[in-house]
Image (tube, helix red, strand yellow):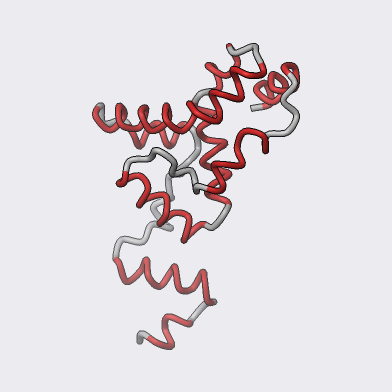
Length: 145
């Protein structure tokens, strides 16, 4: 999104904290449908703060063409503060209706496909993978032989 960054600089937006700090305070859940809020909370607890930055950048990437058309400092700030999340959730609802949500999330980079080798098919395998990641290898085997 270097083009978007240059566009922001050209209209005088040098500090993005001006418009995205509220997203971090609300975990990107302001005006979010409850189902989406629950998914965001789960992702936040698993991924940590990084998921918020990914979410904000993904939303900006999704609306990049629209943002590039805005040539006024105030219009851009207002859209990011007030319209970015609302419009993103609206788009997600439309995508769900049209059954293309996964493809959109893949396209903007919010989710990634896993290789078949790394895919864990059972809950036990997923639990082992999560425990190994958080606590170190073989902890799962020690407690759950």
